[in-house]
Image 1: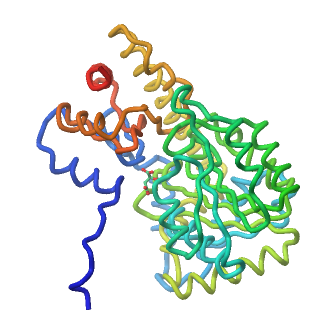
Image 2: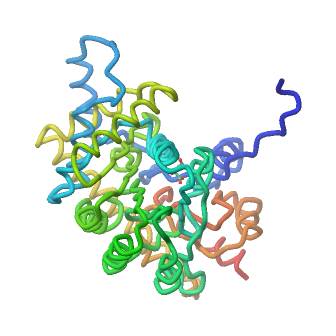
Amino acid sequence: MFKHLAAAQPDPILSLSVAFREDMREEKVDLGIGVYRNDQGITPVMQAVQQAQQRVMDNETTKGYVGLAGNEQFNQAMMDLLLSGTSAHARAAAVQTPGASGALRMLADLMYIAQPETTVWITNPSYVNHKPVMEAAGLKVCYYPYFNPVTKQVDSEAMLAELAKAGPKDVVLLHGCCHNPTGADITFEDWQTITAMANKQGFMPFVDIAYQGFGDGLEQDAAGLRYMADNVEEMIVATSCSKNFGLYRERTGAAMVISDTLTNAQKAKGRILNLARSTYTMPPDHGAALVATILGDDALTQTWKQELSAMNQRLLGLRTGLVQAVQKQGSTQFDFIQQHKGMFSVTGLSPEQIGRLRDEFAIYAVGDGRINIAGLQEQQLDYLANALLSVSK
Ligand code: LMR
């Protein structure tokens, strides 16, 4: 049955981690997959997570099944984290999923059963897995202009002009904050404009928010999403605890539906549970149990917020440090990195130049030119600055 299959295409992000591990050069730098590392190059288990883990272990009496929706306390906590202070909270429902990828897929499957002719509009460029996940669910995908490669910022005018063509059969996928891969975010004014367009033109917004807390702060990073949620009838959200709780391998995320009424949101949730049953049945418990423990305890929440903020401060310091390291070598070519938000920046380097970074400097970055600033160590800044300038000549 399988011998006629074409060989699998390597994943543009995950394949880098494998190649990096196999690289024996001492000076190697991994700026591929989106993970935070400390200055020792380690992705730490956060203190709040360690403490929660102890509590979960001490109190766990069974490994019995939890249920199709996963941990309901977690689901509630994720709605609080994202929708706190909104009226939309009262007409929202959430399902725990295996990571945000699981949420993207469940929501895509939900859209397919509700409206198979849906086209999902995604930013150009977007997270490399957006298109494959939407298409795997049977949906059509198109790109809308987003990033201006010259200014390295969002091309708001071109984006809004294209979105003006979206209609009732369309879904517009937005990044809640810390755009992946570019690091260029839309403004609050853009959120307001797109909200008004959704209401006028009839398309549904779909927000993927995987980096809350890595931009301007936990509350600020959700401001656009919250405004939109309060002002549209229907919206869907995929969210992740991989980055802001450092729970990458635990696959902890949630799919959320905001509808005109709580009854309709819960009906959509019920359909997601059917879809989950025929896909993976239930999400893994551990990560969600940890997040529910942290967010259900004031002291642990405080610890977590402080750690997250410290991680973010370090990331901002790395952005400044990299820009200064390049400036020290006499160039302002990468000054834009300072303006970007979150873990990533698109450098503007071509796939060929990214290849040279890997071959000549053992620096691993995604072929689309994305670098993961959060993966850097202070002592690598001069080396990276030199490499960026060398391949840019
Ligand atoms: C990334 O973009 O590097 C992360 O979101 C990891 C992933 O799942 O692709």
